[in-house]
Image (cartoon, rainbow, N blue to C red; front, side):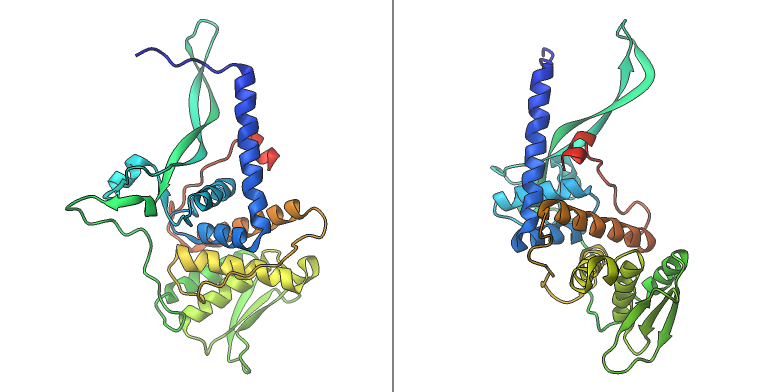
Length: 302
């Protein structure tokens, strides 16, 4: 088999521009409530949170064009390891993935230096797969537990430890009038209603820790700040740890930014993703997510 033809500089530039255009189109979909909700569900999915933010946008947008909301994507061989096979006729979703190779000197000999470039790889959503005959499919997400239970009590300690790392103490108090808790910036204190079941206390702690990580009313305004922390809470708990935090309703603010809407929506999505990863790192087992880095030219274009 002969070697494949190397691309010219012009062809590489054209391919990079197509990738930039595709990424910008995916980001623009966040400006609609439907597009925003699709991305949030993608980010909350157990099998998608491990991807980088911009790959999440691409997966969400490409899935929408195929009439699906992706929940778990993987390559063809990875699906076989999960006792599933990609169904015939399924259209792949393309995302960039890093490839590291050793440099070569003028004599075509390998050097100790390495460089990384990005190439398009194909992935498929679970909805595009079928269970291999005679095989038991590997579970792809944890079972969803009700907020009224105590199944996730083990997450309280790591969340309290995270709050301490951020300089906040956590106090459990019997609160009245339906108040679940709050974040006191001046006292560096998070208060949680101790009359709530453990799972509900976990939800309150995630919500208030998100506030403590910089999502305050002064910077964002009350409505936007609450949308951001509610979304972080949904992302972390609904998919990553299997806790039912309140149905399918995903908060959204129409007209996120009166000027520069695209820049604003990207900033909010990046804030949600960054804070969610910080909390996930504190409560999920090491290695639960393996981010896929984006090519830097796409980062700049986004």
